Length: 209
Image 1: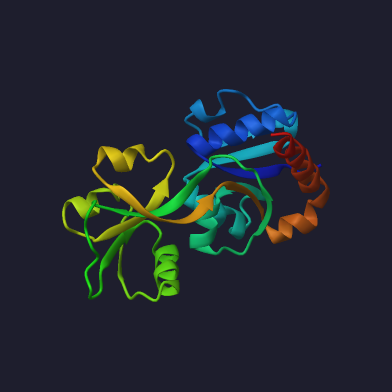
Image 2 (image 1 turned 120 degrees about the vertical axis):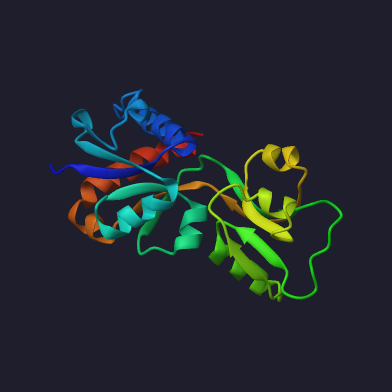
């Protein structure tokens, strides 16, 4: 049986996904993420894990260097990669929202929207019939309205604590986000039995929750 290569995002999604796999009966070492290695073999399960940045997981799966991966729905909507989305794992729940300083109006002409998600933000405002200028940022999105860089931000909200601590309020909720199991189309043909087994085992655990 060939090795199944799994791209996993570091951080909270990794912890939730690893716990789900353990619950599904997979022997995943508890200290897997603590290692400084970026590629870790788990010979007991005939698996290899690639630890990646969340935004890169779908790229690894699309390019075939990973057979399967776990990616947030936000990444899937933003990147539109050529992969199969086979299972909603219902972990790492959050949502994308529009936020800004309280009591402020958007400019009438080309209001500025700062975000890590330019495609999602553009699509959302297009559906609203609004013409906006998108400013792509990679971190500290909450800073943009505070320094006058943007009228609004589009960002992930989990607890809302970060917005509150920075004096921002939520204006609109765009879409709910959970993590998804994604598969490379070629891998699905070549390793269908291994992948189907994994999907079924995880699905049974997800349904229990």
